[in-house]
Length: 243
Image (tube, rainbow, N blue to C red; front, side):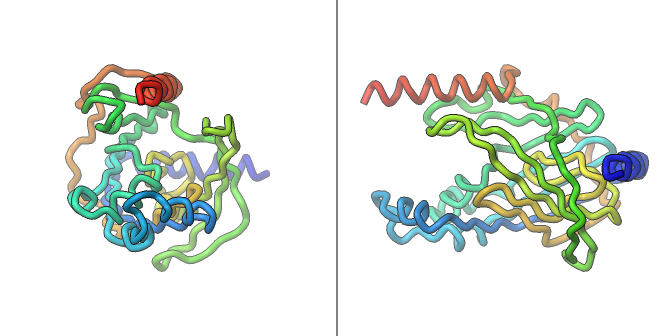
């Protein structure tokens, strides 16, 4: 019965957004486990870092039009504020992230850092679809939202680990998009929690005039998320060996 309800709601959502557009703003909240937070504070030069204060300085925008969306950081502050820079690192935000619901593809450029050149790769992966709808609901910004839980496998220093992501979506806003590349639910995701980071909506502007969203403008060689992870591990290993 639950799967039938999901399909019906998804079809309604798909038909409803076909001629729609919008601009959604999100804030970020970062909270680490006490043991991890202690490790971070013991890093050289990080004694006075506050991830929670840094997260408060960051704002994100989700723009969508028809079957495409773009999620990005309103940048600037993280380049000159260490608190914000560290909070961003824990947020799992990769880069400007595009999502196409027709092709069910999410893509973004690699980060420009020690391991990669700017716009060296375009990473592509499938839209996350391992959602399980729950009966729980709560109000967010005056909208009734419903809980969805998903799981994915992440490669960590300890090997493969199962991770949980929690989304609160709103069927009243029938747009199957969300922050940080998450999508595919029968309603707009107003709150998303992935491990230590939580994206929460702060402003909803519908029927905004949005320019066409075109992920083909991304420069770089196209690779899968699995290939990207493999290259990152290889390059990180080479740098560590050279120290």
